[in-house]
Image (cartoon, rainbow, N blue to C red; front, side):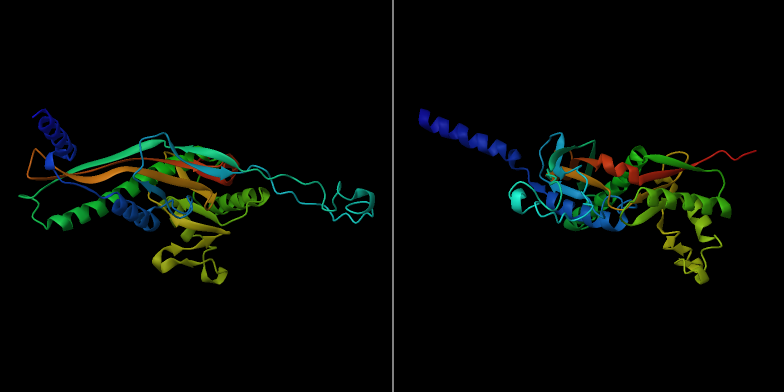
Length: 311
């Protein structure tokens, strides 16, 4: 009888471990895939972060997202090939080289921490949803992915603003001022010898000033389409119009070489679970996220701010 009692307790414990027979279904993989797909299409600052978001599903609660291998050792450019008879040959055999001094390349494991968190919590009642249950879950998963991408974009804009190495002022948006701004930006990136595509994310007011600029004509081959209020390039920069809400107060544009940063998220959970409070399921999600840029890359990030007009 004692033996049977122990078996009964064990089975009861297993039953309780299955959430009292309440169905729990994980949507972490689906949410991750939707999140990455939506980010590539809808995130305004996606080019800054390499065109996509690093997403991990099923992660545990911890402070470190992942490790990346970095190296702050610059490329060594030799002055000339040494052809000396005792360099690499003769008395220099085994203790010299004609290539010049050898620089050892060592990559460092850099921890990348999470900086902020996100959640969602919705309820779907079978009596009131007025839609196919499975279709509703699919719709809400996609809509939550879109909402989170908007949140990532807001955080991404704030991150770019904070890491910008320099702020250039523009007092008015007349043709001469806009031209001078982009000439100054061109000088900045040329002097820093930045390699890569130059891009400017701009507020609508600056975007329209660029589109309306005399230089943006078909004769100049600027890539502008005035009829569609669209522009591809201006003074060597790709131009992208971004809503005002994505910028901090007093800012007009972010300028950078594309792909200098990384944005990432860890999905702790994305699930449905039967509710005790109504006839349906709670749709829940939680995760951590953050942004990262190498210190050396910060010099390639510049923001444009409103200046005070001279009076």
